[in-house]
Length: 183
Image (cartoon, rainbow, N blue to C red):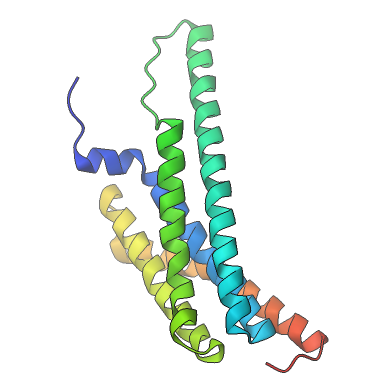
């Protein structure tokens, strides 16, 4: 059996890396943007962001573990029932969970950092910009493994993903206005 290269290891975990980063960047940005424009409280934004990142990283890790485990079991059973040779080289469930959790944590920190450094009202735009740039870079990086256009992939990931931030902002503003909260 040949030894796997670092690139092969990355490709084996590509789903968890990209999914973990993208989902964390988007959900964290969407939630904290809505909370920021709805409350105007740096404390609440940071507390909510940290709780969200920790809870979601744990949830995503568990989901990745369980889905990978069940997919492997189903593939083995399918091959056994069809009398086919069993050759499953998919991600191991524990590895999938760890990769998902680590990259979810890394992604979630990105939109939260500006709220540690700036007052809440001044942190919204930098958080959106740094997240958009990071999403673009993740899309471009992923394209380097698929030999597709890095620019197209980066733009696609950025535009599709930032819809969640927009939804978070709109909900945060709407709730603040409906409750008469001046932010």
